[in-house]
Length: 262
Length: 44
Image 1: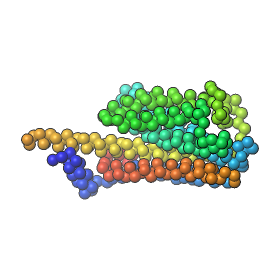
Image 2: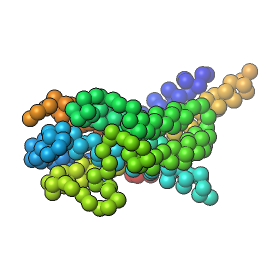
Image 3: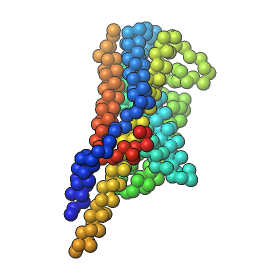
Image 4: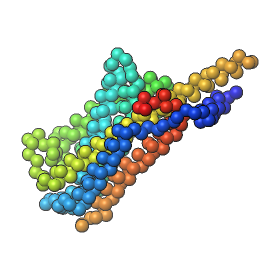
């Protein structure tokens, strides 16, 4: 009997039995999801309608309410990836749960980084007249994006789950070092990109109250989206790891019984 | 509103990307959940 036949037989038997097969949602994820939709709706309405145009940037400032939060949440996601990876590598009990959180967080981070790059280039077209410039901030951000694409590619290499966790964990700990480089690139080099407005070291924030509130609402909305996606994704990874493991066990059993009958 | 196309595009792309990611994640979750019994799902 071939391994694929064994797998099909197992899944058929399972679907016919009285076992329950609930998905990855819980009460907590439902609450987070609803809150994310509500806050996101507020950001869209406030960002497009309620907030005023900026004195310098004009209407293009409205892009900032999605561009800046997406960049911050991408940083957060990559920091979570590094912390979870360090827990996997350095903790006595190498729990694969940390590896799955790291992987899920990196995937969500890559999505937010892509949003940052796209919305940033749209803003750049309006402000600088160009979609792209090889400016220090833009270049280092693109480099960060490509690094985490590489991280996700390494997670898909052949090998055991433990090998995946070790390889990707080391890369996550190195890749996170790029974040300060990206953030301070506007200070280290002469950059076309503006310096930090909110995270100004002097604490001098020159922003209208509603604009600032909308920006922080964007951060809250994207943080909720991040939490929701990571919870679902890491649970899906656990399910996928379990079913792959079972498939492998069944394939080994089939091979052993095949050898025994010969 | 000046440059409305660029501004709307940035919002549509942002929300579209998040929705796409969410739909793909939920679809994968649903497919994988059928292969594993509830007793192996620590969140239940």
